[in-house]
Image (cartoon, rainbow, N blue to C red; front, side, top):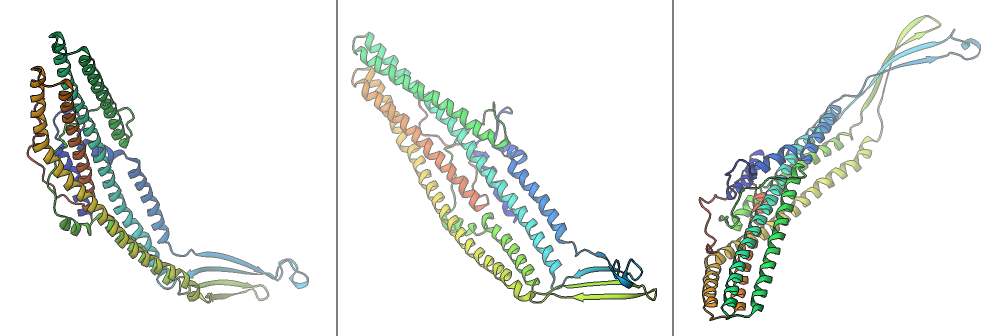
Length: 427
């Protein structure tokens, strides 16, 4: 089990290959993982819960207590029993003899809870790592969005400069300059909004380790790097060993221990006591002893036994339902990733290069007076929109990849040696 959990950790850490480390003063994905693992309160809460279960285990291991008693008879009465002249004192020692393996059943139940907690802690830790990867990806996406907004501004600035040149040459009306200025202002507004999104994404990431006013930058990455994944059939086979389903094995052990404890209560315990009695009349002492056993223990235990058996049956059904839910999630994530992977490649290799050439040709034609400003501006808008579409699709694919790796719990991605070209290297 721990090997599988460690593998999931490795798969999440592999996402750092998309965001390579370079400068020491920047936050890497590995750094974010380390900060969350060290300081997140949910992990500390699990440690506190472990202390509670340790105490419960120690309590479950205790045997029934010994009881010391004293009985006074024939005292403070009337006649011959007036005062303490005829009083008889009995000192007793009593306890309970547990039968049916109750002590072992209590120990097994307490220990199974402790064992399950260890797996729950690891699973929760890996969920936090996956959430960290998502938030880190959001920061990278915000940085990329800011870069796209900056490129759009550069395009609009070139358009405005060309419009002014044509206005000065008398080949274009002043309204075209105003229109180009408005387009540039909108591009600057988009850049300012992207800057705010960058700040919000960093705050959202830093909140995972309790930092309220972050001042770090993340490593520049290329979210367009989308490595190949296995087939859905291969991933579904690995899904059976996912930590989320493995938890049901621990819960079943808890249920079986609870059932054994319920069955042990069908065997009645024996209450016993022994003591010494002083006989006042003869000034002698005598041994006294007693034993008792409750009746109907088996019938009283039946409701608890049936409840424990029903919980085990419900647990099996719940596991089947969880398996179906996880498979549905895997199918959805795998489909999102493969579709997005194809779309990113098509935009990189086909759409963006053609739009880049078309925009360059439109610029030359506009400067030569062959087309209007609106035709050139429209091509610029389409190119910017295609860049943004490629980024959005790639980010969705990265989120799907994180979800797939969280579900499977093992590394199957090979980090690329170099980031592929976006297919649109021209300004």
